[in-house]
Image (cartoon, rainbow, N blue to C red; front, side, top):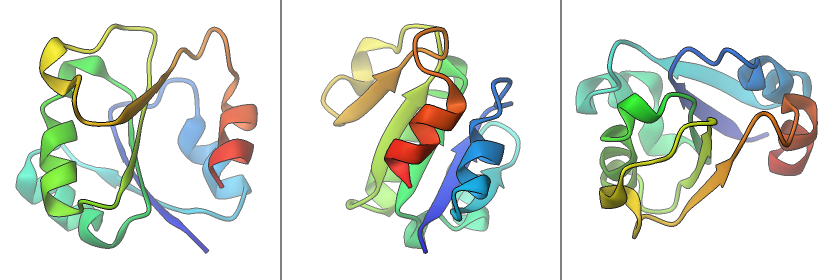
Length: 106
């Protein structure tokens, strides 16, 4: 079974869709600081999902804490340039529904 950490409000319900696929989902509290990510279990997670581009600083933190984590940005908003080299898969919820994304990620 895989584990995912979600940062952001997740308005499209990707976390619920991942849980329905058998993924253990935890949520990074607050603004997804280093401590928030650690508390959510990023160091052992297989997947980090960002649902709010305003929290993009969490992407390099997640990568630093877990170099092997897969990172997915599931947001309609553009990511800042500083995350460009972080190997982020960006998906727009308007183009791919949460169930389809969860099925592919699980």
